[in-house]
Image (cartoon, helix red, strand yellow):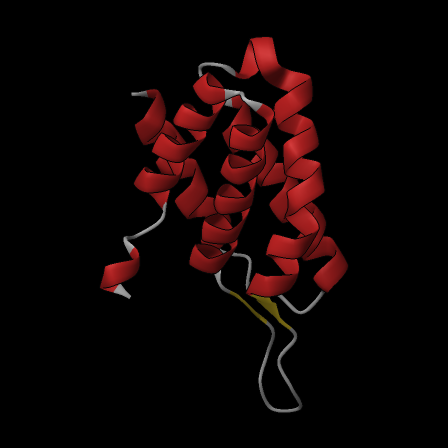
Length: 120
């Protein structure tokens, strides 16, 4: 049930992120992603660690997924690319740190939220 709620929140969040103000978008995405991470079962005992991972990896993932657009094209945000990038980097660092329980849960959430690469 908790996973379904997370998926629904995520879908609602990223549908409306195609905006032209990058700074506001970046803050909103970080805020919404934090809310998703807070839904993890292991969040309470690992809150500081998970928040630090999120803050550390959010800028790169956002930069990769956000396209400012152009003169005749509005800004766009690739939510799948953002999620894939941030979860990949968070899980990688988590494994390097030896936090296997947290890594497993992050990996499971990523698998639920990010379509398989073969489908792209």
